[in-house]
Length: 470
Image 1: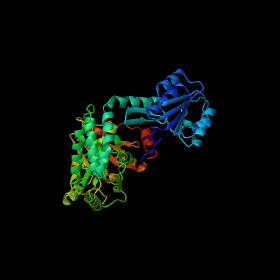
Image 2: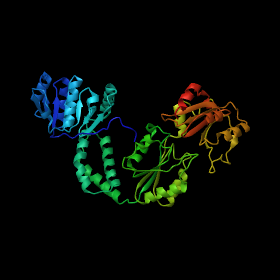
Image 3: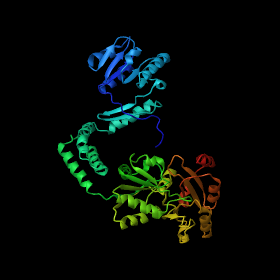
């Protein structure tokens, strides 16, 4: 999992004693939040403001003590919040709270806090917290406003219904895939009809659907395109597949950021498919996904880019069908599409390209495939995208020039397309091999050549910066 600046947790405080030290406006807001969470709030302030006095008078959950706090006041509390100006008093309060065994928050002093308050979107019991780890509160507020605008108020009723129905669903003792079907259908209904009150008849219908899933013991295989690397380029269907998978068998080229989208409980197995390095045999991968599906699991075979473009999908589909296992393909954004979009280049510019062709430069023996159509590949009216050319481009370029392709034909190499460490070399067919050889690069490589790529303008300085640390 990618590093987290803070751990998002939700603290249950209903009926518990909490402490607020101070009577400022900020302390008023924190006391009101604690009371809204069901806590018993005791406020200690030698000079409470009018707002704090009014809040205490209006809320049975808040007790105001018109004096300063003491160490003894913290005994038995579950959470402490301090509103004080000076660091000395903040230090004393923090240390006292920790000594009493509770987490502490000192308002507007993150260095004294065990926990921090973020932005809150309240559709209770659906509650969303937003944190920037104190780096940009205004940015956090903007995110909160965006979520508030798109999240219907009616979802609170659906979340409450889920809370009530959860025990009923748990009593059915359904296997995971059946429970997931129930809650998946529930979520679909909630998002489609947020303004409607969930009807009791709905839970009966969803239970029937879930029970029907119990009989479907055999598993399934889904070939899912992970896209070129940017997790935001995942399709919605791919995200749903990842979040419903029992097992994910993924290529090494799939970055961790994409796997972070998946269900946390899913088993993840690296298939080790990487060019110019040790790899699992395709036969072993086929046998693995078939065995897992036969165990009744929902297996996602996650492939970089699109599974149907040089992803050996045909072999895996054939293995699944031979075993009588249902198989589904979820297409992804191809590496070629991702690279072209990241560069702002059209693959099929009408002034330069009459045809778009994808080709692999890596045969079964690791060399250039022997059956390539060089007449088509040297066509000046085509845009060509070359996959897996890291070890063979020099030979390919020499053959292209021998077939009459203009040495000055634009050629662009893209490493880690769409990712944060994307690197680009804009060159020509004649010189790109030398520039690649002198660059220190690592990751999936794509080469695009043809007149349509003449618009790629990458300065030597930007190339050097892009490849630094790759």
